[in-house]
Amino acid sequence: MNEVFNGSSNYIADDDLRQVTNIAMALKKPLLIKGEPGTGKTALAEAVAESLGMPLITWSIKSTTKAQDGLYHYDVVQRLYDSQLGNEGVDDIAHYIKLGKIGEAFDSDERVVLLIDEIDKADLEFPNDLLWELDRMEFYIPEIDQTVKAKHRPVVIITSNAEKELPDAFLRRCIFHYIAFPGKDLMRDIIGVHFPDLEENVLDQALEAFYWIRGLDDIQKKPSTSELLDWLQALTISGIEPARIQEEIPMAGVLLKKNEDLDTLESAKSSRSAGSARDDKELNYWGR
Image (tube, rainbow, N blue to C red; front, side, top):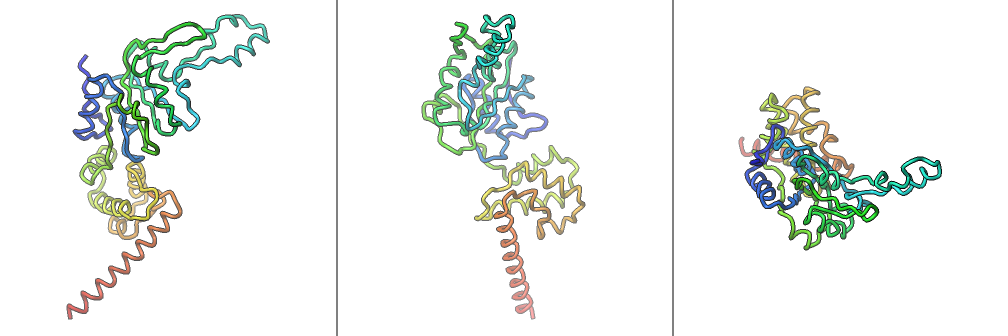
């Protein structure tokens, strides 16, 4: 089957991202995607699954997640409970083995897209603990003396917010791509997918305000694409006049989620207004 990713109906991928995704699939290596939150890392896996007509299995990583969790879990507590109740089948340990997300991907009767989301949230050894399984596409369950081998090699996409460095041994086994934050032109295309009927004036004003905010040095959590989309929807629902958007930046709480950032925005707006007033005053003086 010729598997080529060309984007999807709801995901705009640039040429570099499409190419590196297809290279990772051709080389049968995990694709490691880094980038700041809101750049579409998780959505890429959804888009690849949609584009290739494959099921998507998502393993969301937390700070407490261990590599073993993705392989299988032996529910010894349930087995003990059943034995105390005299339930049948207690001697069949396989009944108490539940596959994790990697196990499900390996055991699937059809090829799947396996998303290991935000791998950098786990401890430093977590990625290295998965090297064997992702290389060999198999793992061993000693409790039942059984090896689970992948029926079909999944398309493995791993995301990282770059909160911590990943081990070199793990990086060597991945195809790497950094998703830069979209520029205005690409952002227009992304918005067009979600709001095809958006007024041009609203879009122009919103984009100018959005990128101005992202350019402020003291903003701690820069607004992402998803927050921009929410803001555009809020602006549309409220019927804000386009001329007010860039100047007032109404409903800024949809874009910024920290009190400090809202304070920074208000201070920057005041400085900008004061600067504009000085410019107008000088223009009037020299225009006499």
